[in-house]
Amino acid sequence: MTKLRFGIIGCGGIAHSKHFPALAKLADEVEMSAFCDIEIDRAKEAAQQYGSADALVTADYKELLNEKSIDIVHVLTPNISHSFITVDALEAGKHVLCEKPMAINYEEAQKMLEAAKRTGKKLTIGYQNRFRSDSLVTHEACQKGELGEIYFAKAHAVRRKGVPTWGVFPDKEKQGGGPLIDIGTHALDLTLWFMDNYKPKMVLGSTYQKLKDNPMANMFGPWNPESFETEDSAFGLIKMENGATIFLEAAWALNMIQPKEAQVTLCGTEAGAEMFGKAYLDEGYVVFNKADHNQLEQSQPSETGGVFGFSGESKEQRDVEARQWIDAIKTGEDPLVKPEQAIVVTQILEAIYQSAKTGKVIEFD
Image (cartoon, rainbow, N blue to C red):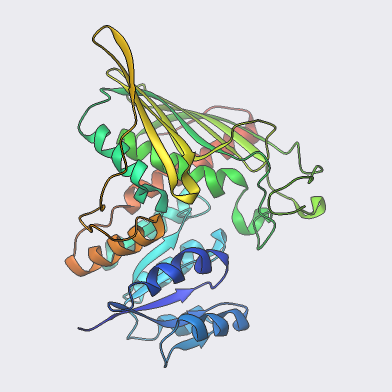
């Protein structure tokens, strides 16, 4: 069987924590054949650990794209470079998985979507939280109409003290923002997906940088306040065209007791759903609530079997994401995360930043 050949652009933290381990488990079907990083030693180390015997190692992503044998490219670079690298990769005839967020703004995301349509190549965005068991159960319930009309939702992405202290996370120019664009993007993606609602009408947003000078007790160690350029928390009120309301909260640092990350609360006319647990460790769960038999009821689904029909396989979100992405390429079907959906996430995030900066409501055409 001919293996799919992958090229990896960006060999930093997300590559090692998510993409390399997931693809390595599928070694019978895929081959990591090219590694690119502006720090060439990182690319060399990745190639030695995960690459094929003849793996290309380069600091120039265009050299990787010129390798005709590469079928698929994963773009795992800082946010500012997502758009132009993805467009170049699509134009070079590669299928592309780009890490979240899709881009630093709506205009850049549009270029990616247009390139995918123009080239006919597949494009997906790394929203791996959709592949958690609790997310899939919640989405299925929403699709079946069990919640009725979902008219209010909360998108949770809040840490008490979890500021990332590595890479370029606090660099506003390279990342486009802080927790809103970093982890808020996951919570918003889940919310829109559950609601199947991608038509925002207006946004009111606030961002804060209140705790940058208080690095004590950070789970990743103290950060440098002098290089902390982004917001430490952000909040958005989103009104959809059909009248539904979404409240988005995102924070790397916020003085509160019970943080929630990449989780959603849904309120419908027939029932509600709320996510709990350590979702980032694949230990999350969902509780459904409704009124029935003249009683208030709640239920927690038991752990399901295999997802996407792969009974017995790993249920780690990174593994399920990789499995589904490869199958989409092989079968020609759409990936679960469509760029037409991800672009709306970017559009709303940009509007929250704009609203926070101007103090005005941002309305969409």
